Image 1 (cartoon, helix red, strand yellow):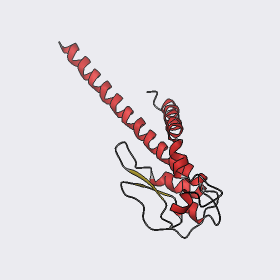
Image 2 (cartoon, helix red, strand yellow; image 1 turned 90 degrees about the vertical axis):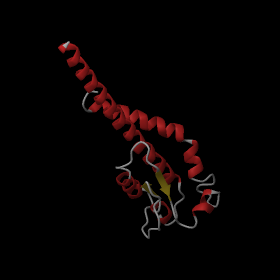
Image 3 (cartoon, one colour; image 1 turned 30 degrees about the horizontal axis):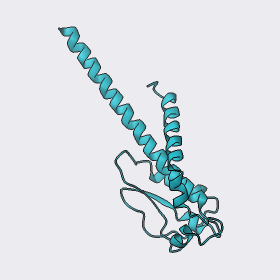
Image 4 (cartoon, one colour; image 1 turned 180 degrees about the vertical axis):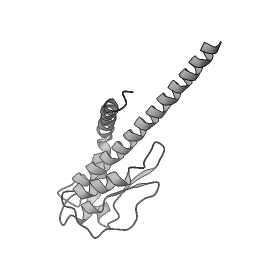
Length: 148
């Protein structure tokens, strides 16, 4: 009887470890997917001064408000800031990608020859690919750590 109890404890611990690892991987997929969406939107955005690209922001649980005066022509700083903002994102959270500049709607619906099909619509059409990349990266990351 004692051995059975020990096995149950061991099995229970294995199940708990599996659940924890699965949750961590799911959270990684959420963060990577959200960052992939934002990065795609940023790089698809037309560039004049770089202010529009700089105003793409991510928020967890609340939509980012206001606008920024900064510029970011290549989008690198914007994507880095979003990565930091998304560090706390986990499965079940609402993640927002927003740009509050007034020209956003016009640019999304063809006002710019640089992005005649918009940024968000093009990115959302690529969502399966973005999600697939996030899952693949999460699997790779999982193989580098604790061996689970």
